Structure formats: C-alpha cells, structure tokens
Image 1 (cartoon, one colour):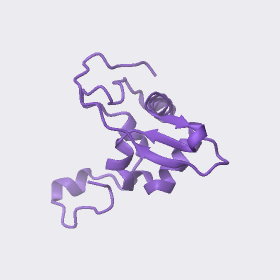
Image 2 (cartoon, rainbow, N blue to C red):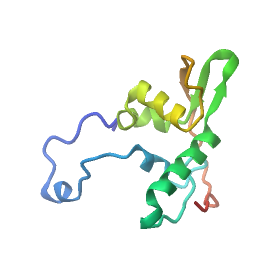
Image 3 (cartoon, helix red, strand yellow):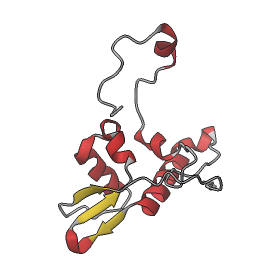
Image 4 (cartoon, rainbow, N blue to C red):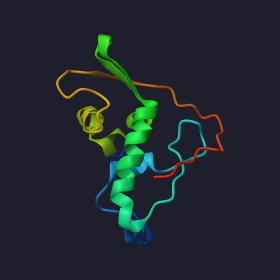
Length: 127
C-alpha cells in the first residue's frame, strides 16, 4: 500500500518477521525486472549503509528530471506508490535535496513520471 496503515491484525509469522523501522532506501535496492526498476546489486553487510546511499543516489540521478526554469522535478512513480514510506511530499523533497537532485533553496513542485514496465533482464550494477 501507501505505507500509511499497517495491517491491524497481522498473523504470528508476519509479526515475527516485521521490521519496526522502515528505511526508504530499500525501494531503490529492490528489482522487479522492469526497465524503471533499480538495478540489481550485491550488498555486503559491512558496507550496507554506504551501498544503500550509493544505490539511492544513482537511481535518483537516473530517474529524476529537474526543470529549473519551471521549478519542478519529475520523479519515479515509486515515490507516489509508497509515499508514506518517504514522508509524503515534504519527505520526498527532503530526500531529493539530500541527494542533490534539487536545490535546497527553492520551492519545487513534484510530478510523478509513468513507470516503464518493459522487461529488462540486464539491469545490474556494482556498488
């Protein structure tokens, strides 16, 4: 879902495996096989935080289009689908600023791009 409402009555198995603290960067590490998915990468436990940051930055640079003259940025639909995980619009803008996709000093409008579901079996990277 949108990341807002947890399942009210999860079963025992789900409660055992559920993560309490969400890390939005996971959305930029998972691959579904579509062209607009983040690339597949091998993650190492001792470098996980660094690799998640690198993967997030690379994915956002590839999929975001900042239009300075219009004060807007077109971003991946992942931000719309899972907006609760990102902190809604203000959180999305904070993430884009953190990874230097948009300037920190301007009021920027968000636009969500259509997701390209074309099969892409050669989408991998080294982090």
